Length: 488
Image (cartoon, rainbow, N blue to C red; front, top):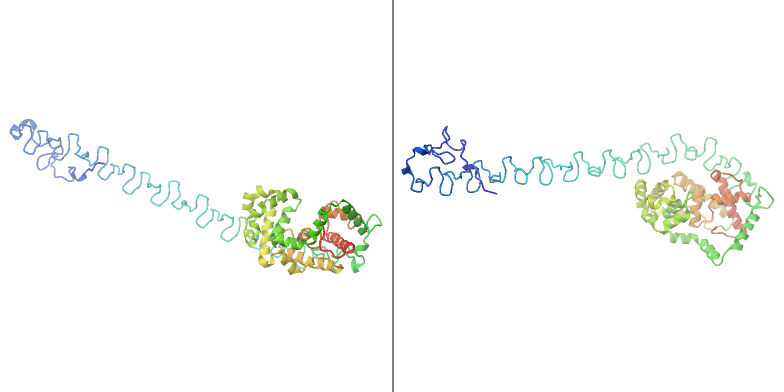
């Protein structure tokens, strides 16, 4: 870049010129004097044609520059013209006549569009409308969230606003500002009309006068049976119940089934399995690391007719453990079901129903409320003192009395799945307590034995009927085998 000196440019502004453009010495910017060249006295010039100042008749020295230092083309020895610009069009500071340097930036560092070399304007915004911190003029980053982590609708990445509610108006626990969940029930399990999910009022009875177990205020259901399966005044016990279609009692019928099983059993595999099940409680506490949530989540995964083989393979592969952070209670309680469904449903979809994800998270939250010390397998036994074996008929009665306490509490806190008789019995069976799961197959067999009446829809069996079936098996095992601590 040439070093052009603007201060040497002879203009009317900075030189004393007359109205004809000549300075006080009689020369214009080109170095010509105000005499007519043809009338000049040749004596004023030497033999080489230069005057005493070293200029020829045209006003240029031997190097071709006039008295102001410009050549015939109007440029000085540095290549700068009378306008202070170089031949390339830039002054000594490196700017052209429009005020921009060779890179296109003005003295303040901005281009003609008002952006600096980093792409920011005077206010700090990029050409793409984002500032140096990555936020646009509305205050949102490229992911659509502001510096506080909320989107334009006021919701964070988890879908909750600053008050902790999602777009549907529900908080992380699933309740709205009025304290009701998406099904319309409050934390105590009652809707606005005062009914719980079983249709019972706060006093525990529905409009017809029956509680959640189907029992009236006198303790008996519509058919006159109490929760233990006895008629009023306990007129009938389990051993004398007869088959609907014949005279053989139920226990003899069960003997026939057992004999068929014994005839087909493979030893020592069968005996080893029985021995393992007789110590299931201790084994389960060890294998499940005393983690009640892990057992609950596993049973939920297998529920609702999910393909057991595929679910089992998925669990054994470790995917289930990974998705639910090894069933760490605090971590699972803080999971977001929508995120899991978006990122992991392709890996755990064999469990069939998406609602199971939220059910597992809710189980974790409810267990958390009791404290981690009460969220173990052993705590379930210690808190309720459920019998781990049945030595006499009183143990059967005690089992159901304590079972009622457990399920009443689970219903009160609205524990997903396990507020149901069938699923809670399945949980207790898995943990090693002496009971069975009254599922579809068990109820069908029970109906064929005459324990209950056959129904086309398995889901229509009442709690009393399911308990009668389980109680019948408990009584049979006690009478035939003596003290019992596990059922197959």
